[in-house]
Length: 96
Image (cartoon, rainbow, N blue to C red):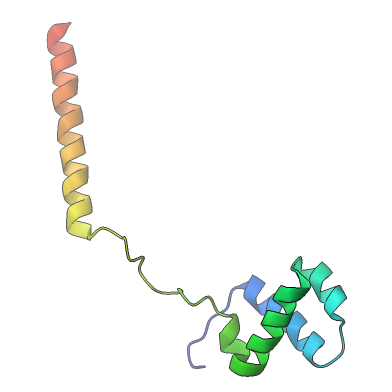
């Protein structure tokens, strides 16, 4: 679990589920605290047993979206838009 970083929400969820697992808190009470369904609490209990703390970390953390445009393309699109705005502005000024 080296380098595992959880958000405050993930940490709180872990603490509540740990209490439910140890019998210190009921599933009903956990549903109220976490604002989740009983079924989701059961899923989290299974995750707690199988994966421990790392199971509460979002799986897509530190990953780039699959549909993210490459930086070069983003830069080219930005320049193209800037040039078009400049040309459009010149055309409008020329008409007036």
